[in-house]
Image (cartoon, rainbow, N blue to C red; front, side, top):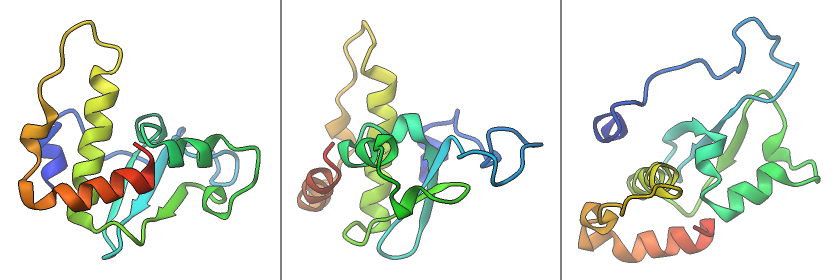
Length: 128
C-alpha cells in the first residue's frame, strides 16, 4: 500500500501486544478501521486517537461492541478506502509533529483538490 511508501517505518506486525499472550487475555494495542468499500487498515491505537471519535470510543467506560474481541474494529460506512488512507496519513503526521519543536511541513500538499470535500466530511465525522 501507499502508506508504507509514505511512512517507511511502518511494517507488518502481530496484532497482539505479546506473541505468547492468549487471544482473550487483553486488548491489542492496534485498531482495525474498515472502509465503506471493505478495505482494512490496521494501526496503533495511540496514533488513531488523533480522531476524537476513535479516542472517545477507545477510552470510554461504556463497553462498545466495537471494542470487544482481540482487536478494536470500527466499520466506517461513510469513508471509502482512498479517503481513509489519507486520513490515516494525517493521523501519522499529527502523531509525529504534534509535540515537535520544529514547524511541520505543509500536509495539504499531499491532498489532491478532488478529495477535499470528501476529506472534510470524513474529518468532521471522525472529529479530527
